[in-house]
Length: 277
Ligand code: C2E
Ligand code: CA
Ligand code: CA
Ligand code: CA
Image (cartoon, rainbow, N blue to C red):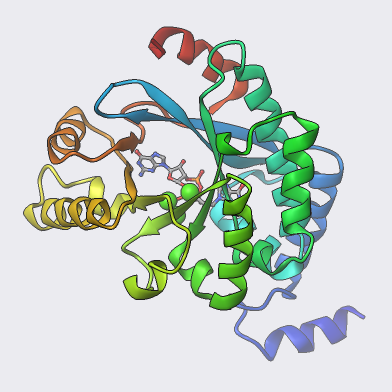
């Protein structure tokens, strides 16, 4: 059996091949981790720049793998996407994030939570129903939930994505385009999606206070997106000077280490006590 797998593995680029021995182990471990509830969720605050108030959080999954130490999501999310495990994983993240949102109600019942969604989720015929059921189960208004989709993910099977995203939007859920500027999407296609918010990729934001070109791209993106009626959030804000520049440009929201790293639930609630209102 192992021999067959080895032959199979050598036929493909090991980086792309989801069935390489290493990925098989990772997949088996991940399936177990989801089943045993061993994943955890960190939350990173977002701030509204004009008011200075915290507006919500992005949920980011963490896998504190027992034997290998923490595995970054950039490593296991692609495996989850290629093996179908992204379905139970996204469902778990949604459930966990909405549970946290319920806890937040005591602090502020208008704070939003953003979830990262894969292209695979958009092709899943049960996805819409799962989302609506979970909102229901947590008695959460759909307007509190934002779904983040990368340009690239939204471009896969564009008609299908459009249908799914439009239906979710009809229920009041917001849509963010993630990592904006790094994909190959055309604005004419994005225009057809029911987009509420654009998140400018951190590669343009991190050094914009030192790099004229980056600052120009961010400024132009903010203006263009505003003209198209989108809210704009900058990710990867690491310094006060970048925060000041974004505020001066009229960018709507900011997220990044300068405000706070992604934090576990309890630490985040402590952070909120100090930083909210
Ligand atoms: P992303 O959606 O672009 O998430 C933002 C990433 O930037 C996070 O990395 C976050 O920790 C990091 N970050 C936040 N502030 C700063 C900053 O000021 N500077 C820098 N350099 N980085 C910052 P993380 O948590 O390692 O996640 C990496 C990617 O994995 C995410 O990128 C997202 O694409 C994916 N991911 C994470 N959680 C999930 C999930 O639950 N579902 C799915 N489908 N993907 C997820
Ligand atoms: Ca994101
Ligand atoms: Ca992003
Ligand atoms: Ca990213």
